[in-house]
Length: 226
Image (tube, one colour):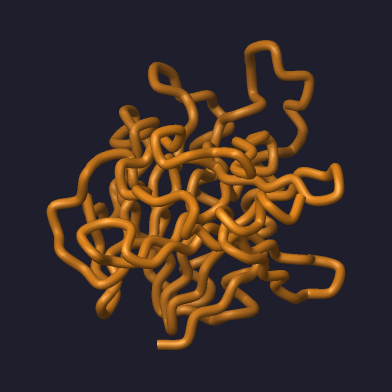
């Protein structure tokens, strides 16, 4: 199975995985950016589906943002995600996250607590998984890394993290999420129970301008370089 990074997403062979879309964020409250975060999410998701032509797309949790209300724009955004997959002949599936308490109000498609793709299990990562796997792909913490004074969303890949398995943590797909800076974080600082050895987490950044992945040493080594 060939893996590829692209615009905060992970491509696992014929499966596209995105996490933490937080649809509805920016539509109310104190944010000054009602900003087309919804249209941005749909347009970028559509571009990913068109580029990679997956058989299926999986949302690794937190499709929604609000715990208690669903803004009117949310249904339109979810419909846009459905449409992008339908036009590409891909199936859209959701593994619910901790923010998805209102998921049933806008989503009646395939839902799995944990979804297996070969030897990999995709889930949100906010709770201990029930399924054994060689690798887990999760979201939840919204990782970013500071490099030369600039914070950038990053992927984190760690071997022997949970029950001997590798864990891949995706950045938040929604660009309104500021994320957490992982440079000095220890395992106990992460919300996901799947990350158990922060020093072994290797950050990677997707560089949109060069359309390439920039890989960095594990955090334990990276800290000493800064």
